[in-house]
Amino acid sequence: MRPREGRERWLSAAEPDLWQQVVDELGTAVTVIDPAGRVVALNPAAGRLMGRPAAAVYGQDLHDLCHRDPGGARVPREYCPLLQALAEGRSALGEDDRCLRGDGRLVPVSWSASPVTESGVLRGMVLLVVEAEAVHRVRQERAERAERVEQAERAARTSALEDLAERLTLVAEITDVLGQTLDVDEALARLSRLLVPRLADWAAVDLRIGSHQVHRVAVTGPEGRDARQEDWQSQLPEPATEPAPSPLVRVLNGGGPVVQGPADVDAAPDSPLAAVHSAFLRAVGAASVVTVPLGAGHPVTGALTLVRTDPARPFDSGDVDLTGDIGRRVGLVIDNARRFGRQREIAEAMQRNLLPPLPEHGRIQLAARYQPAPAGSQVGGDWYDAFTLRDGTLALVIGDVVGHDLAAAAGMAQVHGILRSLAWDRTGPTGAVVDRLDDALHAITNVTMATLVLARLEGPDAGPWTLHWTSAGHPPPLLLVPGGNALYLEAGQGLLLGAPFGGGDRPSAAHALPPGSTLLLYTDGLIEVPGSDLDTGLGRLRRHALALAHEPLEILCDELSARMSLGSTDDIALLALRLPAA
Image 1 (cartoon, rainbow, N blue to C red):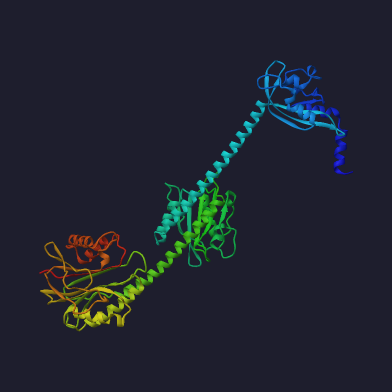
Image 2 (image 1 turned 90 degrees about the vertical axis):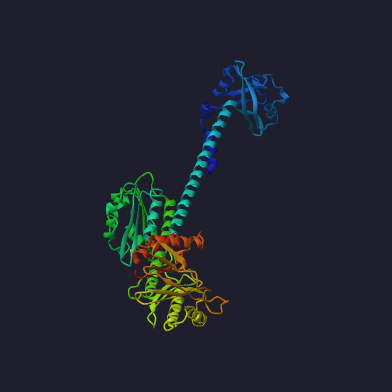
């Protein structure tokens, strides 16, 4: 037997009483009319709608009995859509009709009718009628449900957008603050202040030191709890080299992000490193944990662990993606900082070899300072020099080769060496020595331009002393004399070295130096600050130098460098000379 035939046989065999029970229990009014429009059957819901007993309705013309217009008047039969559909044997709908109840009340109704045929012969119509108020109520309920669903969806979309905006803002802030420093400790401190409590309740950073050591370098918790007192920052046990279930070990060995729930936190550790980490998680009350690698290369730089203590706020996939992105950025900053540190160490070693020690010259005191630029290779083209010439006089040099990198430092070393050779046995004007250096600059070195001051201090050990100097486009020396006065030695100025329109003899100048006076030679990094002009810088130097003139020479150099370098972006070289008092 085919399925459809079986179903039809079951329907035809069903008890008539069953169908009558189904129709009687319907909440919708059902009425059956014959081809003449007379009522031949109705269910209790239809009787309640019409407000008439079934016995009073059977055999009645349904149109004449109940159908009325909104004003209560009987609708002409030729305009009745139900009778028209009955005559044509088709289905029909009515949306704005009135049913006259037995108590005389008009009830707005909507209806639908379908023809009943047997062997192609129309036997009547089945009419389903509902009160318009009920229809309106159902539609209103549907509209309200749809509005609630739409509001919920709109709120969900808004919440998702706000969450995305917060995540993007956090990433932008982290990128901004990490880009402002190349100091690892400062970078991690700034990172922790952003992550806790905005993204997590606790944060821990573990860095690989070499190939076998791991240091927990930062632990940050809620405000008021000092993570250092928890004693979690220290060298950790060596991570296992073989794959291990511990999330931290997996991440440090190159695995991807790992999320832990309460059951994972309570799991028995599988290595000494995992034991320390698990103890930390249990101590802070971890309910949800995410651990991500720092950096994107192999081996990884370290691991970032974020902890939430509220079981109702577990980390989701969006949090994992966000934390993974942060980990990559932090790892890049740490890698750059480490490279910068290695470059700085090389540059500082080079600097120590390029800047010579100061000579001892009787009772004359000498002091010097070199301060590299805040950023870059930490060495540049600024230099100082002091040496005794063949005739016993003291030569002083301060100079600046164009550039702020290792190439500038190499050029500075070339100029420095050539100038020493040219000045060694020359007793003539200092301008003549610098002219010879200018002639040799492009032929012997790769330096394009440079500035300097070359000075000779002439006089016996007990004085009097005279300073002879020439300046090749360099800031003027500052002389501090006893009695609280200071003046710039602005004479002896000529073009900078390498200037295309040079020629002729450079000017030289001379000035008597009183006993107890202090002479300061410096590079422009000491007086130039972005956003300020040269006159302002010279004025600041004069004020600070006068305020420190009574200090020992070493202290004067330290304090002057500290006060004047605030805001400077250039190298600073300072050479100070102090004559004995009378």
